[in-house]
Length: 269
Image (tube, rainbow, N blue to C red; front, side, top):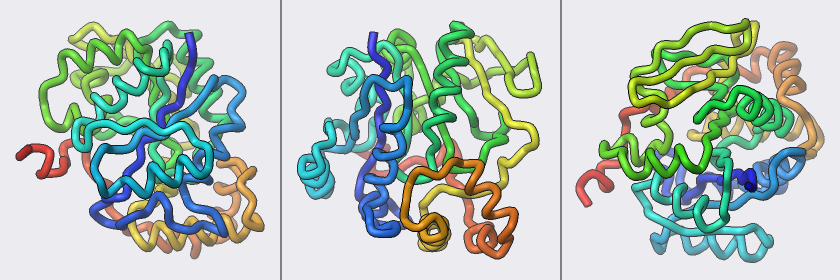
């Protein structure tokens, strides 16, 4: 069974319109994400999953021009978009990545996949929303599940936030047990086995995603520092922000979206 990364992307961001195609050191952000994921040793393929809305036609055309696999699905039921893409590609393991994370590290993806396979869980992640915890910088987010678990969530999840945010159904009501400094484990009331990957020390307050103009400026400066290349690691970025605290301050005050925030257009449709 194939291991497929599904990159969630759309142009209709509420805080930074068209962000996934905005320029970062000479390349659109989505291209940065694709290029970095292609360095993974354990992914068998990747696909951009966007919406069927006409506003995302330019994104689909961009993928066609660049030769990226692209599938289109529900605008607001992103869980269905993921399920349909995974089913069509015959994925046995699904890796969820969002297109606003241009510092995503393929080595972290591979490490997460190794732990997922070794532990035999249904779902693994290197970050979860409060109260569960995050110890990796915002923007290195990786979520992994088996196709069978994804299919069950697709069948059973019935709340708007569960559909829009894709994975909450897996980890809700979890109480984690620490099994090592870098791993926590839980079995939820729904019977899902869950693994949370942690980092010591805790860097969970660092913000490396792109959701606002300040985030974009931060990431543009990161890429400029590395000469416009995209083969730097997350540890390279960490060293940079530790040596240049004024860089991290550019977007330190930006607020991250919460789990229960949903697009009201989807609720009303």
